[in-house]
Image (cartoon, one colour):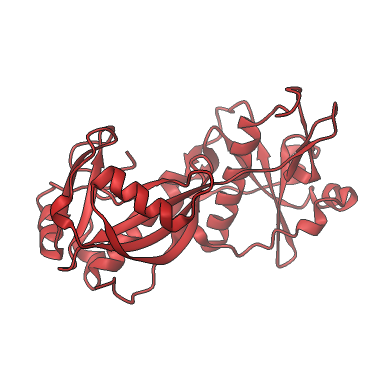
Length: 305
């Protein structure tokens, strides 16, 4: 039996702003758009925010456009959006992480935030040329880095990672707890795609390594960006015909548990189960499997770690 037909909600997969890649090379347009543009500010995994919403500043209020720290995000309804990647926190500004406020943002702002964070994280971690080791410069309004020594161009990278909801023939789900997580914090299984590996083969390998079971059915559910720091989560559901072989690998996964819907409801109520954050693919897969009543029955403590 596969999961219910309820559509999978993917909170971070919103994309309402046109990235307008053709404008990135138009330096005159980028500079002229800056003064009236709406600009996010980002530093060390956090955005300038107010309460539970992102704060947008006008470019003119932030001074001149800086090609090395101001990145073009796109256009929506004639409004230009940029990110300023700042290095020094100002005391009067309030900063919040996407983990903290992601559940409260509009689809437009979610799409901007995951784009901005993924781009900023890449720039922070890849300032030098992978060929000669020299420093690179930001070009094309933040979309590319170029080495002035050898003229090589370097592009943002996204790490593919699968995430899978495992079920048995009784429609119970198998969840695991990593060693580094708090007590009672369980989630679905996930792992990075290795070189030369398909998504489906990655699902089979990761599940076998971490949970010990074999899979008979694999079904693709959807994907969403996960810029912590630079992943794309590809979601699957799968069925095992060897549930009795389920065991934690003892290395990454310390504990595993099978849950029926009744088990999960009771565990949430008595606080013996903590689920992942609402913005995560894992949480949404669990809610889709649970079906009617998930919004009411699965409310409780959430944990990032």
